[in-house]
Length: 112
Length: 181
Image (cartoon, rainbow over all chains, first blue to last red; front, side, top):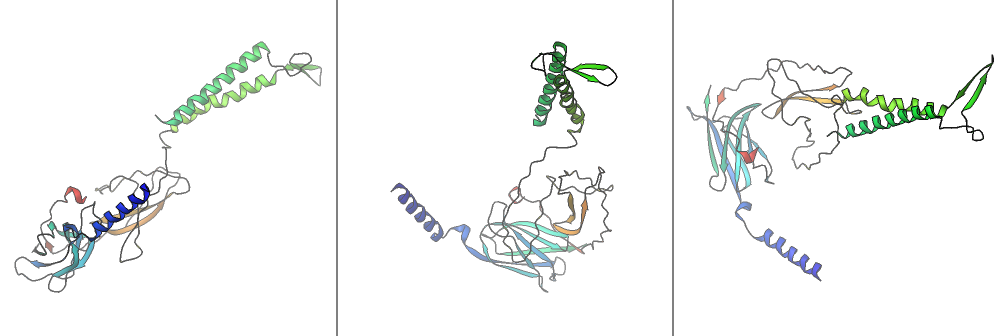
């Protein structure tokens, strides 16, 4: 009897936690643009990496910039992420963002 | 404390007891083979020679010599043969790209190359003596080589020069927050 009631309670808890919309489970699109700071020209073919905190179960996601320097991550769970822009093995940019308050990133790069 | 030290101590102790006991038995002639006479066996050999033997005691003496000496031979090698405990690193990978290659490094941290190169200490595990050496820049594997352990204490590995094109752009690179490491 005790085992049955504990199973029912656990099922109710799981159902409640799955159905209840929490802030961490809200999904938003995240887009951005990588551009030359001086000319405002978009930079294409850069790799953009979106990394959640280590203890998160959210996957690491990758995107590439198009010819206008734009990139987009669809259906990103709200939270803190690390955004990294690389060209091959060279890291060009790194910043932390919170997709709860920001769904667009502007990434200016300088020419060397 | 290394548990092998306890075994070595027990081995030495057993050897000492066997040798000391054997000597004592030889001295006292306490081990008898001939149960009727309770005397050591007298052996006659051609030529009129004869000798009496108490060979169980002699055997005890001889056999005790090995466990007594063996730990002294092995003690200097203890540091060379470090204790190895095999564990399995298991993990699930969810990825759109397959296969994903998983490597587990033997060192607790990556070793940065210097002008002299790199120097990584790795354990030699019998039956699994191959190592994959990866050169990684910003999480990109630029080169890799498989090397095998030899009798030598060093494994030489040579890589071709890496010509990495310098990006014409640079931006702000923030430090990685602690919870992202």
